Amino acid sequence: MSVFVIADLHLPFGDKSKTMEVFGGRWADYTEKIKQNWLECVTENDTVILAGDTSWGMEFDTALPDLEFLNNLPGKKILLEGNHDFWWNTVKKMNTFFEENSLEFSVLRNNAYDMGDFILCGSRGWYTDEKTIPESNADNKKIVNRENMRLRASLEEGRRLSPDKPIVAVLHFPPVYGTYLCEEITKTLSDFGVKLCFYGHIHGIHRSIPDIVHNGITYKMVSADHLNFKPYKIIY
Image (cartoon, rainbow, N blue to C red):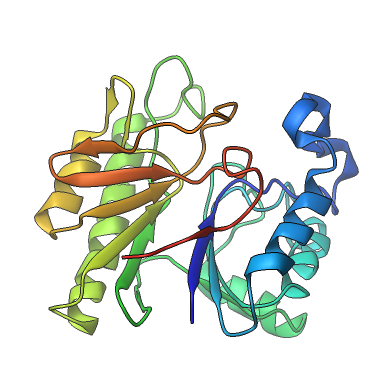
């Protein structure tokens, strides 16, 4: 079994007005790129972690066509919330929705998964860079504290699953990027001995960039356009 990760698919099947093709260039025909690249590298025995901003749907009914598109692709899928996943709801309601529509998805929130070689933990996180803040008039300190609590709950569950296996963290927002640093999130990751963390959210960076290493943790960008819409295989 292989494990892959990719963020920011921004699927528009439930709301055609939200297609990312308006940005041109690499986003042209991006849903077909996602499908073809996925089919080339992912098998039914593999798992793909979708690290947020999966669907433009505002509610379950408009997210359904996007989730059906993914459900028809091979492999198990684990979903993480992004800032544009407005359809996201409580885990209980989402699991009911998945069951009612024969969708096979798992959710990463306040929990963890044993992936064999490593334990998967994560949270949406938050991004408080003043130039690209996700929401205006938001209480950023409150949101960061809440997301940090969710991350800590995930990491605690991960350690309960296995005190010895390495932990791989996945967040939607980058804890470190350029001069930006979310000290609360990075400290929590360090407290639990995390050495590898994936993130998305950042777009328009299409050239290969060096991994960000901060306090012994390697941070890797997996935004879909950065990966040219090909899921990234996690090798620990």
